[in-house]
Length: 62
Image 1 (cartoon, rainbow, N blue to C red):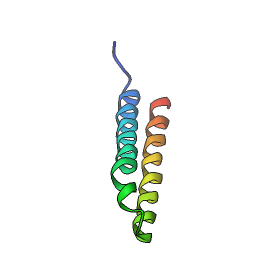
Image 2: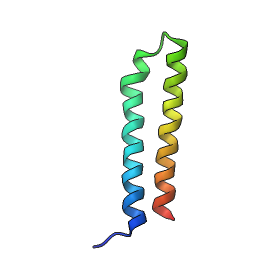
Image 3: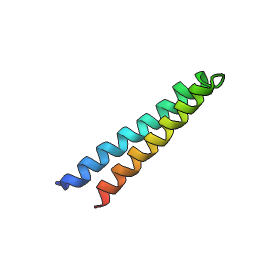
Image 4: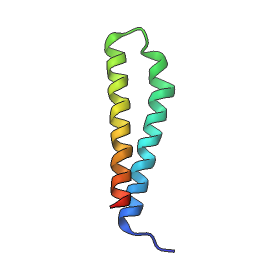
């Protein structure tokens, strides 16, 4: 079964966003609890990963 170009691209971008989200949660968040800058950057990375995931979903369904 062939998949449309948008579906394949959207799926790949969404998977990358989800992997990045879990990487930030598991690897970066526990190490950055003491630093103020580290907490800010890890939260920023979480927002970016959610944005990438939403962008992949938007491309998938367009």
